[in-house]
Amino acid sequence: MSGHDRLHLARRLDTAQRDRSPIPGSAGTHPLGIDDAYAVQDALVGLRQARGERLTGLKLGFTSKAKMAQMGVSEIIVGRLTDAMRIGDGAELDLSHFIHPRAEPEVAFRLSGHVDPDDPSTDLACCVDAVAPAIEVIDSRYQDFRFTVGDVVADNTSAAGYAVGTWRPLSDVANKAVRLRTPHREVAGSTAAILGAPLAALHALLGICRRRHIPLAPGQIVLAGAATAALPLTAGVTACHIAGLGTVTLKGR
Ligand code: OOG
Ligand code: MG
Image (cartoon, rainbow, N blue to C red; front, side, top):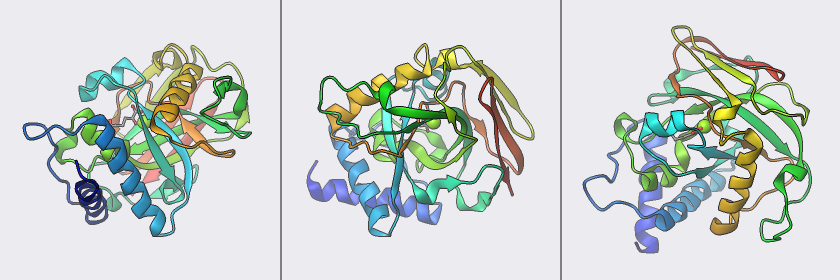
């Protein structure tokens, strides 16, 4: 794929998001390779930065079997979060800004110090100072949420919004009960579903950041990936509770 083609796809995805008009995925045509896909993601995030958005963190996708099964993708992926995606705990969210939003229960980590992904001795768990419950809002720019792994990486892993609850000092977050409740549905699981334990997601993240030259910065947040399948985000209160970490909510309207 030429640089021109990568930028063209980044622009189509960017327009799909801004106009809320989804595009077809690459299945059945030329499947998008993973290297091209991360390059398109870079270009897409670059378009957002050129409009003044700031990077605030990173997110992992497909770290649980429940998510892999729901979407038919079995590779761990990484996307970028920006300040435009931030939703205050308990805040209202205008659902008309999205195409077909879904909510996911997530564990959020906050990076404290400088992280050099290229230093082989770096241990990301040592660079985390706080943990919190989070809701991730995903909104694929592809029709019907149908995509290949390359498609979803190019689309910045469906990243659309995130709400983070109260930060607490880093503690053991393995084997904690997880519950996501929307006005109409509820799904429950355990943080053990996230690669065995959410901290394992940090090791996976470091590996991908090394391979893909994705920088990590102090203060950035990391979403470890949903422990359960995502639920459609509808009007009313959506709440994510994680045992030991508390609850975070948002209110769709
Ligand atoms: C891709 C995003 C997956 C997660 O937590 O697994 C993700 C999608 O399902 O559209 O954020
Ligand atoms: Mg997620």
